[in-house]
Image 1 (cartoon, rainbow, N blue to C red):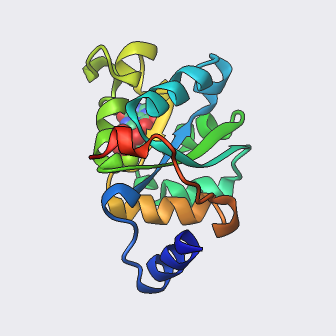
Image 2 (cartoon, protein in one colour):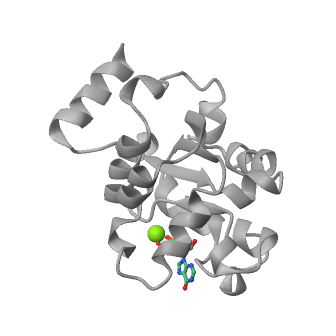
Length: 169
Ligand code: IDP
Ligand code: MG
C-alpha cells in the first residue's frame, strides 16, 4: 500500500524515486542472452545489494528501440544498433537501491569494452562496442523515461527486502 502510494506520488509529481528507492533500467542485450550471461549479470546486481523490482524477456519492436535510442538517431551506427538490438530477446530489468543509477553504470564499465576495466561487466565479458552485452540508464531522468517506456506500472513489484537492514544502516 505504501509502495503504491509512493509510486503514484512519483508518477504525479515526476519527482522519481530517490535515496534507497532510486531505480534504474538495465537490459541484457541479445548477445548477452545468446552468450548465457543472464544469470551472471543478475547475480552481480543481487550480490551488490540491489533489489529487483521488474524483470521480463522482451523481443523489442523497432518502435520501442527507436524511442529508447532516440538521442542517437543521427549517429552513423544507428541502423546497426537497431538491427543488433532486435536480433533476439532482451532481458529487461528494473533494479532499486541507493545510487543505483550511478553505481549501475560503474558496474557496467565504459561504452567501449576496450576501455572498460576488468571487474566490470563490459570489461569482463565483451570485446567490441557493437556487442557490449548490457544497457544501463545514464541518469535518474533517463532511468525514469526508460522504465516507463519498457514497463507498465503493474509490471513493477513493490516488495519488502528482508535483508535491507544488512545492506543499509
Ligand atoms: P551506453 O550504452 O554506454 O550508454 P551510448 O553512447 O548511449 O552508450 O550508446 C548506446 C549503444 O550504442 C552502446 O551501448 C553501443 O551498443 C552502441 N554504440 C555506441 N557507440 C557505438 C559505435 O561507435 N559503434 C557501434 N555501436 C556503438
Ligand atoms: Mg546511453
